[in-house]
Image 1: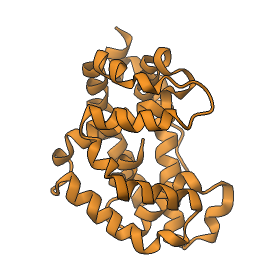
Image 2: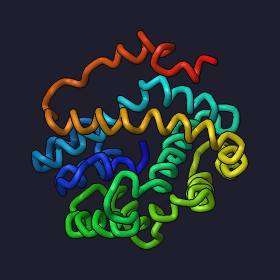
Image 3: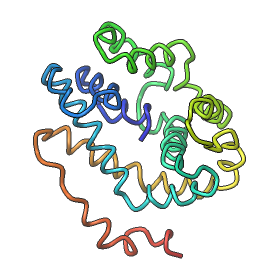
Image 4: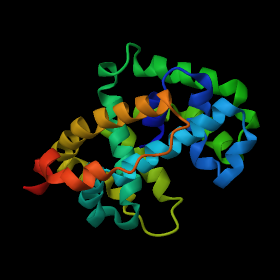
Length: 217
């Protein structure tokens, strides 16, 4: 999942929100230097990422992306999923997306200076460009991917994101509708017991054809 989803899946706990936001910038055991509840936010981020990466639907979405984006298919898939969340935001939250982003940034702003440099730079970028609100449109998502393409080490194909997204939009939307509620359920359970070990997701590999028949047509 990408930034907007990670923020949303943190609930309304400011410490979890901060830890989840900086999760990609905290390496190894460095998270142990953080406040305990912020540590739990980092662990929540990692659990969500692991759940996502192991999920049969996310793997299927990546397979759709593979021809267009190669090794960057999972990155593009994450961003595309954020688009569907942003587009239908008011199904998931009582606030508008603009109001929610302002709220989240308001919680993060006073504490971001003590975070890793990568997180500080990213927060500044988000807060000055209104990127997360722009995720509601295809143009906004594709603009983000175009900027990302300029920073990739290898050829990413992200500059062609619009043609790929529009060509398989309905299929991606269908998969989001099935996948995202499961991520929400997983994140909610994880928040309830953040010290429990990450469960092996064998149920997805053992029963995928029964649970997600549209993938195996």
